[in-house]
Length: 254
Image (cartoon, rainbow, N blue to C red; front, side, top):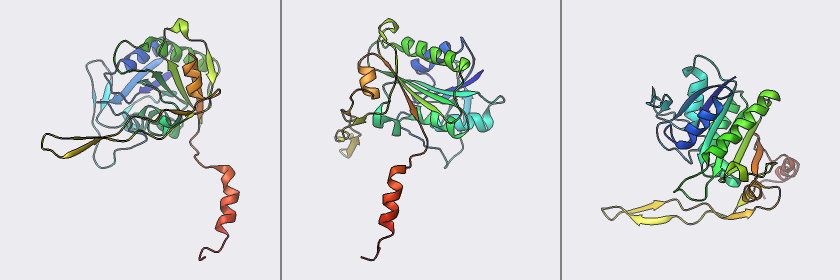
């Protein structure tokens, strides 16, 4: 099996190295990742300039683009051998609930799915950005999932969004199939000034958990379970089609 691996934290991220080392125990791995941190890039493609790819000192291929660029470039022209599936991660921080709409990690997996491959996005639900984190736990989870996939392959239309609690592997209580929870609205932007006195703004923190009860990804991770959420590309709210159709049949001039 040949796996294409990417991320949004950049080619030098600890989580990426941990994931590559783990997956290489069971498969051939090619890493194509952004040259710098591109967290929050979502599904953006770079269309206004050419992309450049080069081999980094750690052996990974780095690209001066987004996570989506990396996966798209790898599959549609960069690699001589097509992958069998795509892994994205290990992200430094959770991608739960509304996060998936912004996440570059999930976007890398989504691009793999767009191009016809089963894909997994895996994130470590770190509480802080400092200190020692258990990327080895998330890497072990990824290897367990890959081993299961090799026995029971996933369909090409499936994306798994996996969030792993930041605890030693021995403290992980198991796996739960979950749905996406929801957050409250984001915190306000943080206003500051540059050295010349001009206003600058930092995007505020994500909102706290709102819909986070049993069955959600938030609840599973909070209770030391690995959350596995199946995602789909189709954003259509199918149950709203009939009522929308009836609404559209009304007199639009009134």
